[in-house]
Image (cartoon, rainbow, N blue to C red):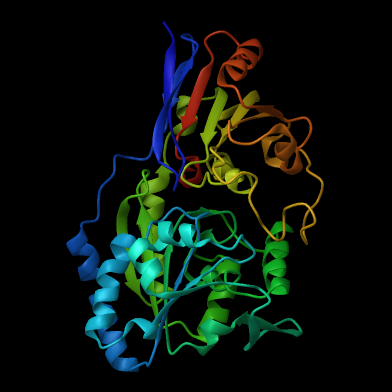
Length: 405
């Protein structure tokens, strides 16, 4: 009789749980985010009541709502319904409300993609823009010897609302907040500099916002250009809304980050190891290959190692949108370099599984020594030949959200 594991797949594209069979001697330890606790609609509406006060205080003539894109897993429809109702009750017409998608250097969203993010009604009813790094203007923010440029629609707006999810992030601690502007709405030199600085180890920390040099920097920048209202969203493992914090973009983000860390952190992983195989599934950030590396968060965040020295790491991702797009890290991107072995794996074998991309695309992003499989049975056969008898196996089904102590 075979063992089985269940992995969620296809954020934004079905969100289904898929059953995979594995050998019966695998000793499986499943580390999953707790069962969803849904933040009810009435609580969402109540959390947005402070928006009325801010509108009365500022008396703006227009409102711009900044959102993240489909590489980020939060569906905004449950939040936008009460938010837009508040705006219309305050006297704003449809043409006084617009949306700006904070892409950074990611791929522009199509109308169909925007409908997924905002909901069909909002996408059809209101004006929306994709951020374009070339469509920026100088701000008062000076970084080194250069003035930072920011999206012109954002700078021209009377009242700015940022709505974003908080997921663990390698250098911003958690996504969202000021990161939605810097680098999300910035020009390409600023986008490149933010990434290059942290890649070189100058600043930033995974899963931590306190004393995080990168976040402190971008929050200083954001305070200079202004942001009137922030909505921080923490999601459950199935992408439903777990919690919302609203108000000041720093204070609300800090509160939401505390909730997110408590929800996503797994204690005692090392005590249940060490493991021969760890399976990290990229859901709910599994839309494209370039984002699949977020699934390494359980390994990167571990303060105590839980893998054997000769362990195998299996990364799985749906890659619904294929290879993906990032103006910095795809071939010909400003910061693209030929793939190298991943240092944090310390020589361990990396194996990748996806039945939505091909081997050619995989090796654009990963080193030639890494193994690619698009057939699950072939993958299991390969692993069976590499693993010891009765291997200990750790499974992280929502790995792009999951932290370990």
